[in-house]
Length: 56
Image (cartoon, rainbow, N blue to C red):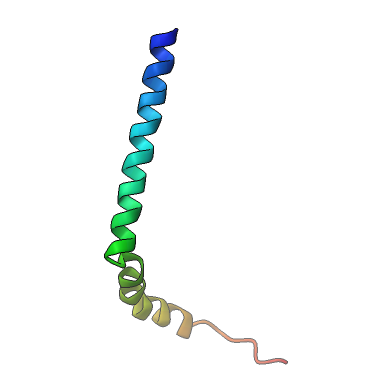
């Protein structure tokens, strides 16, 4: 039972380190805003076609 818990804790730590490194890479290279700038024209096309409710 102790070996199983040790393996589970090791697995959780490895996953946490991988997620931390990936989030650091996204932050360092500003990938979230680069993705947003790529998606903006696509989203604009979609939302520009929507009917608007012009009542105040």
